[in-house]
Length: 343
Image (tube, rainbow, N blue to C red):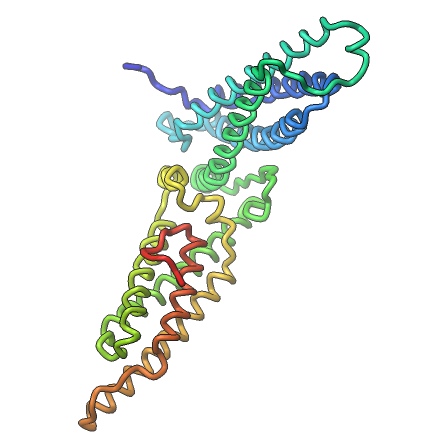
C-alpha cells in the first residue's frame, strides 16, 4: 500500500506480543474444553505447538521490552532499534492464526453442546460427516507450525542483535532471556565467547581449505591419470565449501533471514555448530596440506637431480577420495550444495 509504513516502535510491538500471549491463553482454554468433549490427536498436537509458541512469545516479549526501555530512556532522537519489518508481519499472521483457531474450537464446542444430553455425557470420537472440521483444524495446525518455525529461526538473530545493541548503547548492560535452547545463549555474554570460538574455528578451516586449493592447483600435473578425475571433483567441492564458509562468516541479520528463506544454514544452526568438530575438519586439512608439501618437496628434489616426473606419493587417488568424503560431510553441515554427488 502506497505511503504505508510499518510501526517498529518497540513499546507498541511489546504490547502487541503481550496481547498475543493473552489471546494464546484463551485459545488454549478453548482447545482444552474441546479435548474434554472428544478424543482427537490433533488437539494434543495443538497443545504442544501452543506450549512452544508461549515460550517463543515470552522470549520475544523480553527482547522487545528491553528495546522499549532503552528507547524510553535514550536522549538520542535518532536511536536505531534493530528490528526487522518481517517481525511485524509475523505478529499479524500469528494473530490471525490464533484467532482462527480460537473461533473454530469455540464453534465446534458450541455445536457439540447443542447435541442430545445422552450423547454429550460420554466422550465421543471425531466423526466429521463432510470433513470440513478436520480440514479447517489441519490448516490452522500447519499455520501454527509455520509460525513457530519462523520465530525459531528469527529469535537467535534477535538475541544477538539485542546483545550487540546493549553493549553499544548501554554500558555494563546484560540480558539473559529465558530460552528453550540455552546451549547457544545460556547467559548474557557467554554465548558471545562461544560464537567467537565457532567463528575462529571456521576461519581456521577456511584458511586450510584455501591453502589446499593453492597447493592442488600447483601440483595438479603431478597426479597420475587415474587420480585426475578425483582431483577435479575435490577441487569443485572445495570451492563450494569456501563459498559457504565465506557466507556464514560474513552474514548480517537480514542476510541470515535470506539464507533461511533460501533453505541454507540458519543463524540458529550456525550458533549450534561445535567448535571442536570444526577444528577436527581443520586438523584433517592441516595434515592433508603437510602431505601436499612433502610431495612438492620430493618433486623439487627430483627436478634438481635431473630426474623424470614424480607422481604424488603421499596424496594419490585414495587420499583424494577420502578428502572428498570429508568435504561432503562438511558441506552437508554447512547446508551447501556440492557440485556433484559424493561417493
